[in-house]
Length: 363
Image (cartoon, rainbow, N blue to C red; front, side, top):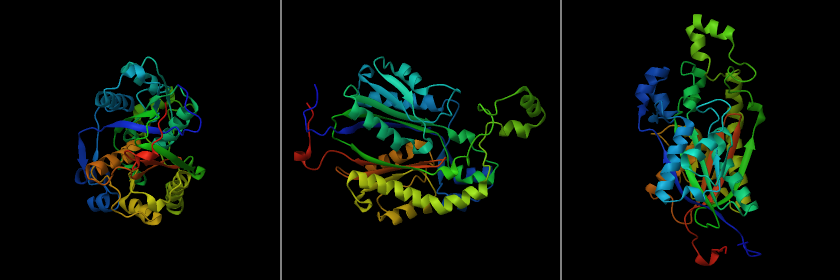
């Protein structure tokens, strides 16, 4: 039935599921692989240990696992899914491939349509904004799956000290069910900033349409094992320049994205009850909270997981719920950032509304 005139339709998160590989590597073990002192890994980079995956821990496969876990958890019929939005990495099992339709097939979501959205590790806030806006504009979208998978850790060159800011990366995936007219875990507003000065700072130079694999490359790699090793790994064309610019602009951009989301949600940054942040160094994480005026206790830092991509803000919140840091009616901020560079934040009003009279029912 159409919504009553004047009724505000809410989009809420029914539930979620997270997939993480069981295997981890400690800071001590990682130190021997990357030649970075253990104390630097722990105290500067915020890594006690991090997730590592196996052959099956690839973006699409992990996303399917998280989706199936979500459907089992909620006992939701996949035939009632209207749309699947895959917001994970385009570095996936195959080149020029739509991950979302594979997920649709594996779930048996025959009545849905599926598509991919790419925004690196800022993908969670953007995906929630896009899904919410689409659901508000299309009354046929009642139940939407937003999911992701990330294994960009495979792209990191662990012999390149300039890439140490990515040594925290590990695989992971999530799935969440969004519902039209669902006022629990309500998705409020999102703030997004892209800083184009970083557009070419992190990339894999070869294997794309500009520099595809050629017979000449194959012959060169046959004679040079180092070229073979580096062929599919990330490169930093200007590492020192990037480091300088991040130092000058990163905190400002993080803060601006959070404040933008808060302003659009009708709150102040100091009103945030819990903040889940993509895994960055612990000093930067708590420095952001200090700059926003958020008490340092209102978060969970992912010391023992590392950077699992788009999953991080949700994973931190999951820990926060278990630790009693996230309560009914709390304002939760999910903060992501990805190379390119993008900074994004979505505000969630967690749980049920504190005042039943505030609930607006759609019939």
